[in-house]
Image (tube, rainbow, N blue to C red; front, side, top):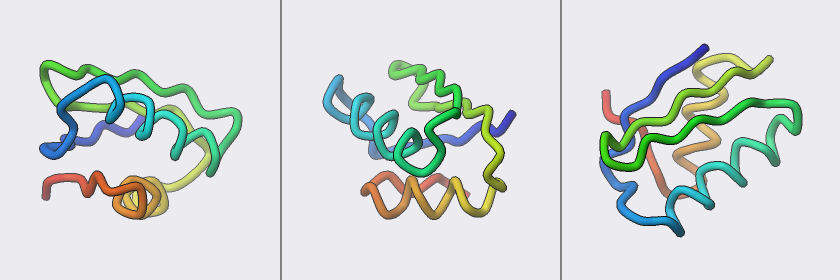
Length: 64
């Protein structure tokens, strides 16, 4: 399980975009978004670095 803080995520559209981006990269991924906390937890076969790249490409770079 990987958890990322996504400071640029602020609305339902953002939530959908993050979920869709992860699912496109790994269709079997489980995605749990906490919009008020601006976090996403992902269970995936992809590495943390790969997931961070997917999120960044979607416009939601994880905070360091």
